[in-house]
Amino acid sequence: MAGSDFKVADLSLAPLGRRRIEMAEREMPGLMSLRSKYGSSKPLSGHRVSGSLHMTTETAVLIETLVELGADVRWASCNIFSTQDDAAAAVASKGVPVFAWKGETAEEYWWCTRRALTFPGGVGPDLIVDDGGDATLMIHLGWEMEEAFAKTGSIPAASAGSKDEAALDANLREAVPSSPSFWHSVAGGVIGVSEETTTGVHRLYQRESAGRLLFPAYNVNDSVTKSKFDNTYGCRESLPDGIKRATDVMVAGKTVLVCGYGEVGKGCCQSMRAFGARVLVTEIDPICALQAVMEGYEVTTVEDALLEANIFVTATGNRDVITAAHMAAMKDQAIVCNIGHFDNEIQMDALEALPGIVRQNIKPQVDRYVFPDGHCVYILAEGRLVNLGCATGHPSFVMSNSFTNQCMALMALLEERPAIGVYRLPKKLDEEVARLHLGQLGVKLTRLTPEQASYIGVDAEGPYKPDHYRY
Ligand code: NAD
Ligand code: ADE
Image 1 (cartoon, protein in one colour):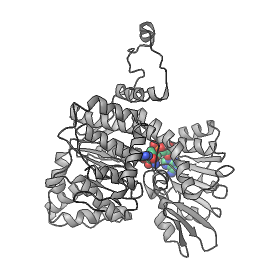
Image 2 (cartoon, rainbow, N blue to C red; image 1 turned 30 degrees about the vertical axis):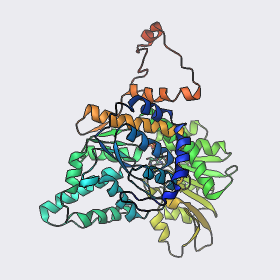
Image 3 (cartoon, rainbow, N blue to C red; image 1 turned 90 degrees about the horizontal axis):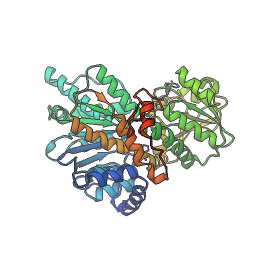
Image 4 (cartoon, rainbow, N blue to C red; image 1 turned 60 degrees about the horizontal axis):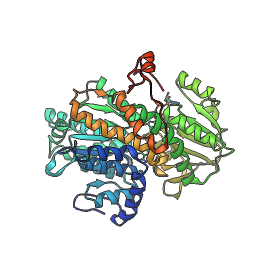
């Protein structure tokens, strides 16, 4: 349903979305306390914020916090399947331009991202909230295409890439000849971006070290209260939610292979074990492999697990972790899913292209692929992140930690006005985010005496750990 300046699936879902948002607010004490603290001073007043982050109920609470802090906000989702249509409708019905619905095509996805980045009068945002780096990517690739066009009068041929990359290239290519400086003016106006996730942060550091980063960035992912909580405890709850809503499968007694034993993989393994599964792990990093084996998981390779595992979960942030050849050799009825940010962890295009393969849709975001030998595998959310494609992502409480960091990063960008580079929030703010979430859980924190503080060499008010401490 398109309004004058929004596009969502169905605006009549707004009352349901609003009730869910009200429930979530009670579970998001960090964001609500920012509203109380900054609601009158409005530190984001006069600033245009574009978001590219899963348009869920929790994100609705973030958006409405940013509005309460004074921002002019526009939003798109960062995945074609992750929007909760009721939440999107509720936010749009309050007048925030939202461009997001569950089940976008790749072309629609980039159209939505561009609309979220274009404020009235054709100006761009001065602050960006990104999750996975797609808003940042669109601006940078648009800028690079304009540079090439200005030098040569033509746009270089697209290099072969994924369907999503091809759709982005087509979106940019169409508009550059008629507005050849749009992305330059957008990039020039950005004070900074705050990035939510591991994969988006990798992209930022890669751009920074190549000297191709156009504006400063805060790495929110590596706040302790983000990656050690959202990535681990969030996925611990939302991975089984996604698998079960999609398949209703009994996890107990099954063998589950989790690829990647980083922050996300650790949470996935814990929940699969808690359900009663035998858990196998793959890793490339000897430290993470050693951690996994110390926890009692068997560390093996995908190849060696093919004839044992019933459920495969990728959590690496890497590409081609489960190949089409792997799926051809899996047990009958294996379930294959990904919880990493991008779908390239599983070779979906190569699977579709296998001679004789037949795709049978079971229900939205659940497909059975039948191989010529008669065995089949179930693919969840077309290989996109299963917790947001087949369920509603992490619970509100953990997202409150992540999103309080996001708000603090935007405020830090305004206060510090840092040079181009990638920054992390200071530990004191990280501790503050945690502190804001203790009361609701009835935590009684021990206070240091002055003697104790001086004995361990910290300020009684924190920070309590050196930056190299790993938690
Ligand atoms: P991480 O870097 O902590 O962990 C990834 C692990 O995968 C590392 O230990 C790495 O050694 C391992 N790895 C890399 N290539 C591998 C391969 N080929 N085979 C086996 N292991 C391999 O990252 P993370 O924070 O756990 O994030 C993982 C992914 O999940 C990222 O894409 C991140 O953006 C995403 N993420 C998703 C959600 C969600 O809600 N779905 C939440 C947080 C993060
Ligand atoms: N990432 C993981 N879970 C999420 C949620 N519920 N909302 C937004 N982003 C998320």
